[in-house]
Length: 259
Length: 190
Image (cartoon, rainbow over all chains, first blue to last red; front, side):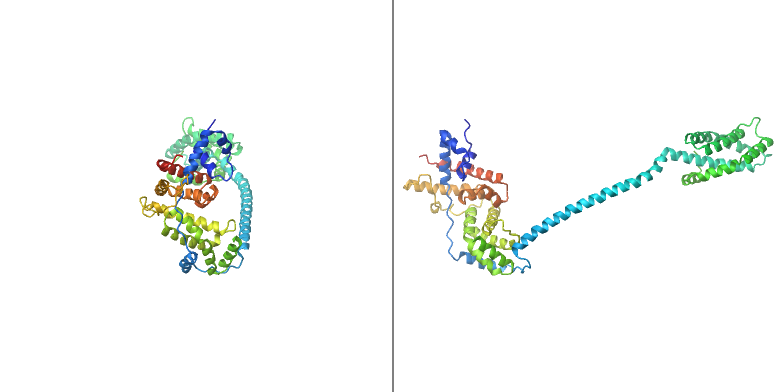
């Protein structure tokens, strides 16, 4: 049998109702004895009775505090109605808050959908031009720029001057590798116009770079004719103008760098 | 009585300050009684009563009809008394009434037979009880007074002290254990 704890006995002593310990106390002599001791101790704990106050005590208290009390301003609403109205206003405020939160949530959700809908088309070009793609565009722009200058120089080249021919050959050699990369990229990107133009440019550059027996007046004249008949310079300029972002190229050119 | 209190409060809030005097006179004695039992000092108890009515007046607009004015102002007084004894220095034993003059205490023991040795023992118990109560924490002391002397329920004690009912119950238990322990040397075995 589990005996009652001191706390349970104290609870039983003060409880106005039976805590359930009564049955145990009737059956367990040990707990009954402990409980009797507790009752005896608690009965002995009688504190000093408060000193008596006379009948005028309340009045004295009132007189001592009255000068410090401000007068309440008359209220427009009665006290009890004020309590009811206060409750109603709290309920209304809560309802408004919930409604506001719901509407705000709906508006926010709607805006999120719109933003997503707007953001998706905006994101497409970015996805179409990832960093690697942008690099290719810059390379192509620079390549066409240099090719245009080479073609201009070739157009106006003095076929009898070796000083003029030699830089053309060197430039053509340096452009060949870039031209092949750009051409492969154009094919990969399914740009037949660009691929065709770069193919003709490739042929011209190969001729310029690797002319058997070196460039001579006759070969230069032939290449000039070939370039003019193909309208290659015009085509390169058109392709050059098609490239949208010129800024990195301009900066690159300004810095004198090549890729 | 309760309805009268509500009517008085309506009048006060409508601008009739003097009406508060009726509430003060009506509840001063009960507030003094509990304040004295908690503080154990007459002057402190009177201070507690005045402060309770002052606070009550200032907070009157927040009073709602969920409890009677008497219960409401009683709780304010209990908290005021608790604050008062909490601010006391720990060794301030001279302020507790009866500690220096145990024979003035009204002490009862389990065996109420009037014998000279029993009266002497009663006086000793009263003095020791006062000292033992003084060594309780303010919360334990207040909880014990409310439970043992004022016959408040655990919920009423919790509401008066602004604590959870379980905490109020534990405060009473701790107080009784400590008091029993200190009064054990004087325990009378029948």
